[in-house]
Image (spheres, rainbow, N blue to C red):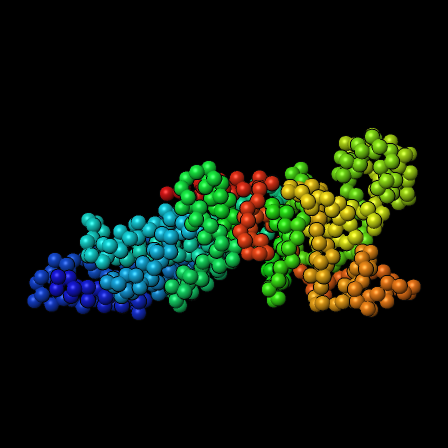
Length: 515
């Protein structure tokens, strides 16, 4: 026992040299008089900084280097940066306080995130640590090889752990099964991985904690997953567990567009919109109607720049062909009843709809524009909120209030109908402005509430507000979450109306099956 303790004193000294020096330093020889140490003093136990670096480089050369953290590993170790894990705490008799065991703890508890711990080589790392700490080298192994393996595997595992917990485990191409549903997301890159290495060097335990997703929704789902797992395996358990696994992965994804302190999230799956102001700690929540299964609302991020009062509706060609023409052929009063006018695309002149042979345009381009008059009965309601996007979808009011009473509110052609359009317009304003709010009310045929507003409504010189450009744009995210957090901080589940969950669940299941 004394000989082993003395030998560990030499090992600690050598490891201290590894941490302090990047150049090779010869080790002092043990005096011959200590005959009981001779069996331990063989080449397999000699520690060499250069040898360890060479072995790490061989691991790097053998790897596929398919991820940004691979390139960060190469860049770091090619420069012979300080070792992260090889210090005197590696052989401490209190392993719970040293970085290697702390890292293994986090890796082995990745199941709290719905991920299989076997994605990481924790068993091989623990085996190597045991051999290092007990001086029980297997045949053909050397201390340098064990130390190099531990250093490389722990650093690679740390980087993948941090990158994937921060940005998601699935590759970008596995996240959506519909070309229209690709909300732009951030992804890890070499610079992020290098910054993660800096954090590891500064304070390893702080770096591990920092990597944990911390949003209220994510934490609620983690707690829920723990409860669900305790139920045992049943069909009900599988339903909730699958929902949680899919949405925890979604919650790890980060929007490419920064949210800021004031932003809007429209959750298509939940038929729910939340307008969030973190500065005032307030949430305006409302029901929404979204695109039907045939006319899915696209998932996207954009910026709301302005609102338009009493908009006209220029009917899309697809709706003219697929809906208006068949309906008109059954009911020739359709255009009159819906206050729609028809214009020739070439001349721009209004045309009598009864003079057109609509049947021949049912399956191809229609050389006419159909425009619905504004105000009462207009399909866009009394106010619309516009934002740049390639799909020509918007947030808008609606005269069809009945749809908000439905459980399944996937009824539109792709645009999002708002239950509380007036309240939403007030949320978008940079600051409370009672006169401007009343001008919006007046335009929507709602009585003003301020004294100044009441005077405006009866003034003959008053010009009705037609549009308003926001002083500052508001980030908008049209997303899809089948587990979400309501404004009252309760975790809720909803149906997967567009069937987007199965592809993500399959990809996560395949990931978790990897050895």
